[in-house]
Each structure stands twice: as structure tokens, then as C-alpha cells.
Image (cartoon, rainbow, N blue to C red):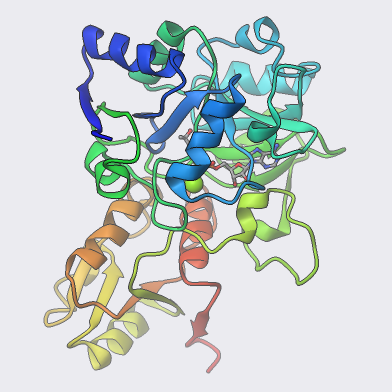
Length: 345
Ligand code: TXA
Ligand code: MG
């Protein structure tokens, strides 16, 4: 199939909506990452998403809506608890996904057989217009091949899925750069299953007690079921081997400089580039600027592979405060949880 390249114009948004109404697949921009959208209420259309991405069928999808009233209008959830209304008031439209007990309209393909459903109201104006024009909520995982870094531009989507989906709509580079924060309200204590642009600190400000699932920062223990099935897969990985170093800024520069040369690159900060002369570098942004690091993360991982000959890429283990937790969570998965601790060696 030929993938249509659409732009952020009223006519092209109408075209995207028409494809979606007809059961097709469209790569759509959101403020977090590009999504691969299908009509969420059409199980057959949703099954196409799994085929195009090569995604395991047991990994459920997020349902995207244009207004909070869509939850009731389309019977997406059994009820909307007060905590969900509070979160929606503070953080929607925006990079937060809320898990609720699922309503009757949700096909099994979307929820992967769970009795819950993930719902998000995105902030990107084109995403909301497409949902409205399509006249239906849209199921959309990130629009990458399963396992590779999530796409933050329409070009990334084309690299992975050209010829496998009906269209992509180019709405520019994504603002946040990492996927939404996922919080479940289906547990006694609201629990973060995936960190993102809305921070744990902000969620505690809204709800009081909020737990962080242990799989966010640690490898899932053998035999334990994943609260969020997506967390059990190796994820976000470039072709190069990502190695994380727990160390000071000086130790990082020393360690990487000693090994710099053929096949080696550093995923670093602006302040390191000068000191790492002779090593291939891709900078995530300024030290301590977690928003910039999140914004640049996936594009940077793809750029490492763009060098063509990188076998090993070294990065520093990020801090976990604020949006740093999202960067940590993605990088530690990209590294398959391998960390070299220079501080205690
Ligand atoms: O920012 C985002 O969330 C992007 C954009 C396109 O909106 N979407 C996205 O979708 O990241 P995806 O499919 O790549 O990630 C969805 C995550 C997965 O880890 C999945 O396991 C989890 O949410 N999830 C979905 N439904 C769930 C449920 N009912 N219970 C627990 N986890 C769920
Ligand atoms: Mg994904």
C-alpha cells in the first residue's frame, strides 16, 4: 500500500478522518509522540494496528478522546471516579493517561482482555480535530515498529511504517517527546505505571497519596505479572547497545574518552561535547534540563543509529526527579536494565 503524506490543513484533517471512519490506520501527531490511530470501537480496525507495528496482542492500547464527555457518550468506562475528574480538570488536555474500569463499548483488541481501559485527552490541536472529525474515539499506540524508539516526527513514522499504514499526518515535532504518564485508578491507591510529562510530584499535588509501580524504575521480577503489560517488553532500543553509567560528570567524560573511537558514541549533555572531542556525540540538551532531555531523547537514539557504525552508546544514568523519571524509565529499558556503577567499583 502507498502511505499518504498529509499536512495539518482542514482538507487533510478531513482526509485522515475519512480513512479512520473507513477502518484504516493513520499516524497522527500528539504533544507526546506520534500515535498510530484506528477507530477504537472497531475491533477489526484495531487489529490492524498490532499487525502494522508487530505488537504483541497482549499489550493493550490507549483510547484517545476529544472531550471528557466522550467517556460517557461512547460508553468507554463504567464510571468516572472523583479522582479522575480531578486529574482531568488539572491535566487534560495533556500528557496523562488514566486507567479506569472499562465500559461496554471497548473491544477486546483494545483492552487485551483486561477489565480496564486506558483513556487520554491529547493537547495537540490536530489530534483533537482528527478525533472530532472522525466522530469516534481513536485507539493509538506510539507509531513505531514494536521495540524501536517512539516517533517524535512524521519522518520517524515514515521510516518505520511507510507502506504499512494508510497515511501519516505531519503536525510538526512533538513537544513533550516521551509518551504520556500512565496512572491507574483501578487500584486502592492511585499508581503510576509509566512516568511521562505529568510528574509524580504533580499527581501527588492533585490526589495526595500516589504510588509508583516498582517496574517503573526496576526490572520486573521473574514470575511477577506486569501491571502494565507494556512494561515487560524490551523497549525504545536503538540498534546500538545502550550502556548506562552511574557516575559523576567527570567520571563519565573520563570513562567514555578512554573508550572513544570506532563503534563508540556518547549520549551526553551540551556541556560534555567539548570535553568529548574525538568521540561521536549526540546531546540530549543542557545538564539538569529534564524537559529538553525528554524532548530530544527518542530522536537522539535514532540519530545514534544514523551514524551507521555505532556498536555501543554510553549514557549517564539520569536523575529521577520531575520529568527526569520519564527519561530514566525509557533509558533503563533501552539498556535492558544494565547499569555500570563507577561510584561503587
Ligand atoms: O503518549 C502516549 O501515551 C502515546 C500517544 C500516541 O498518545 N501512546 C502510547 O501508547 O504511548 P503505547 O501503546 O505505546 O503505550 C501504552 C501503554 C503500554 O505500556 C500499555 O501496556 C499500557 O499503556 N496500558 C494500556 N492500557 C492499559 C490497561 N488497561 N492497564 C494497564 N496498562 C495499560
Ligand atoms: Mg509504545
